[in-house]
Length: 148
Image (cartoon, rainbow, N blue to C red; front, side, top):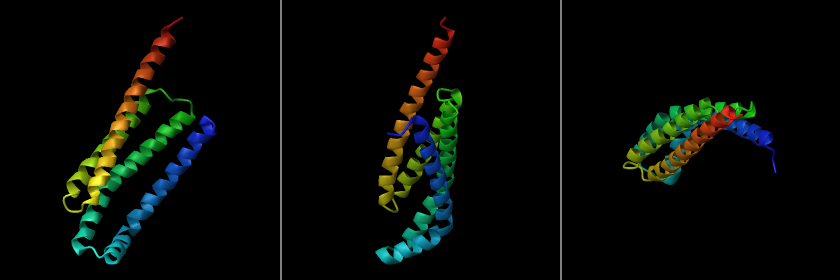
């Protein structure tokens, strides 16, 4: 089993890898969607919808990844239960919520986006709960620091 530090470092490396992957996807997305439409025999207008939705969600995804990266750096420094982490978790929540809303309305044009919408909404809920747990832990930590 990985120690907390090794686990956080691994998560940080994976986050960096995914950021690079998203940047590469942004460059190659038009080519990939063209191949996908041809290979799967989908209508040409699906490509436009997929490109529009992906490029609309990309800034939210990158913001979420950079926020997650900062959260992991805080944890590696030993700053786990601090208000900055609540801010980071709230940014993650908002980004997932934005992706859920965008993909929900896009599901009208391409059904698989409904699946993405439900997954993003579920992650939003989980992040909201984790944010509330962190907030409670910070309050408990503050009370314990005042105790002699």
